Length: 427
Image (cartoon, rainbow, N blue to C red; front, side, top):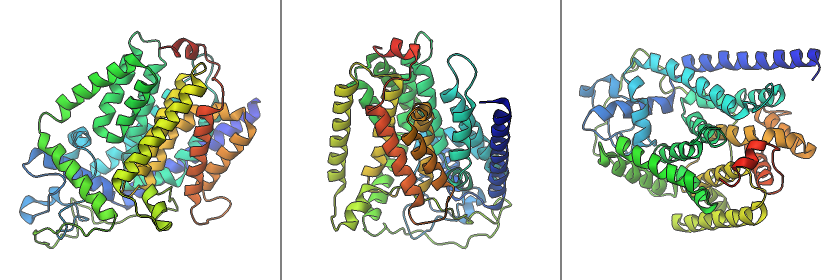
């Protein structure tokens, strides 16, 4: 890239990023972060004898434990993250909520930029500006990111854990594989879907990584399960109840009293305010079967998912047996992980799409050499920006393209021409 073009590209990217930062803090100030409030209250409840998943507010408990979206006529209160996640945010949860709102926005930006740095940090030579600029403007400057910020979501943390796993895996550290696996084992406590990652590495013979994951999961259990196992029983019970509601069963009624809620909570009167964005990604498989007039059970979906993972792993082993790279292996792991979201009978949040930052950071240089794929990737980003105009299922098409690009890069492209890759293939 010539210097004038380089400076122009940097300038345009910087303007987009600056505007996104300004809009992010605007939405953080304008709206209270519905999802964040529920998790903050759940985290605060860890210091009480109440369940973060079935607690209904009582005025005698004070406004610190009030999430205004919680309705007393339902046993469930909207908290869907694991106890490990609640423990993770506990140190900041007892701050005054307006401060928590701003702190969490800053943390999300830090996680996003560190993720990009870990994934696009050059092994040799200067950093390539083009992929960084495209990822920043295409994904982090889109409404997907603003939706995560506005709701106070946590999916960028999951993406960050993927980046840490990958960075450790390809590092020159003596025990890089073990540490990568250790991170993967911990990941399961924050996002149970991540358990499939360990299966992918086991099937592909990555013994050291798998041993590290066992150690990480064990340590995670000691830290997040052993202190209060009943929290996990409540978590899985609540998840089953959400799944039951999603397929049409009525919610479990609560005998709690619906007390009048104050209009101002911890100095804010916008905790129920939410911004609408034109971001609707792919829905779960249950919805598509339902549209075809087919009602499937969760066990049937588990079976279909298991077969999907086996087929993907079989073809990966057959096709990539002699040409596997860390990139292709992690792309396969992410593919199995993200597909797990589609084979459960619970709603899939539109903010989940931010997780695509991980695989797209790995494939962007590869697709640059394949013009049709590169055009498809750029087109997908444009769709996320409502270009050329708004139409139904716009973001869903973009995510479908992301899925197709990832599958192609896993099975039908060569190595990334990295000497370190060849050294790690047999790890």
